[in-house]
Length: 447
Ligand code: ATP
Ligand code: MG
Image (cartoon, rainbow, N blue to C red):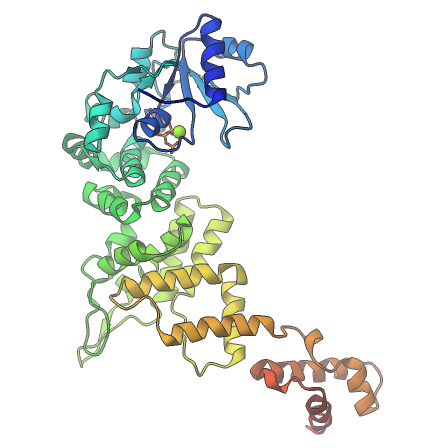
């Protein structure tokens, strides 16, 4: 292979061979090099023990029981990881082996890896060791288990999610036998710690092919284990006279995800599940109209339960909840400024763009156009009201003025009048004129 390693990678190769050890590049890095992609994650495997690795790189940090030494270097955001050949992988379920045994040979390390495309080693001269024909599978764009897929998924059920996630990241398909094995074992994903399930789910959602990934989850039976709430939307019809919907809720949800312009996995997740509550709120009127009153409230409740179950962080949970709870916002041009301000307060300034991105996904995923003049107008008004006063301090009159106009001394009345003025200005910003407000102070005094 003709590939120029970066200087620090060459340095690692050289230091190890000078000390008499074998060392190979493995995993995602090899895959990326073969696919002509940027390497973000440099993983090496060696016959040196962690102690010996640390002798070669005294600055390395050895912080886990799996024999990985991390080396931080300015040339990479992620540390370079050097791992002693493994005989067993760290199983992700509770059956984790007590102690990882260090293997002696490269081949046994590769045989413990998950997929053929991840079981290729590359030496310092660019020569590959590829006992499972991973390069062939890269050319065929196939994710295929190393060895017997059923056995490999029994060893570690997280590999099932990894297969789908990696497929979504690099646009590959899953080999038939491997896919059948996922179908057979899908239920065992429940043995895996929820944090790890979440990590895979969010990586998948943040990938270039989130729609395809969720479809693979569904077809393999993993989705009904991980996110049964979303499957409940399959076949929930929303077509109805005089309504714009053309898909059932499930298809709409997936199309919304596919069309969501945000790259943020939480925003994409919110877009995917924003309508889950429709499964529980569907009603059909005598005229044959289908309604989903308050579905955003129920969806938000479901979103919270899902986020708790999958151990989302506090920030992730809050953001998900807000986006789902507020997704049904109206963009009516007759809304008052204060209604728009209330919307901003409810959603939070920091989430406004994400909320709009969800709306774009929602619109396109329902067969509508990306935007409308009303939505554009609404965005303009979001900007406008944010430039306008938000607090009593921004009024063109202050407490001193109130006291002078009414000839009173400091007391609760001053605050009451200011708050009343503020409420009025919030309704209509053009009222924030000094002369006008001085007049209003007198009138309010009479009430
Ligand atoms: P990413 O870094 O984006 O998560 P990756 O393919 O590099 O993707 P890592 O989790 O960094 O995956 O793992 C590095 C390598 O370790 C993989 O390419 C694979 O060979 C192996 N590996 C990781 N997890 C497992 C597992 N659960 N079972 C078997 N092999 C695994
Ligand atoms: Mg990696």
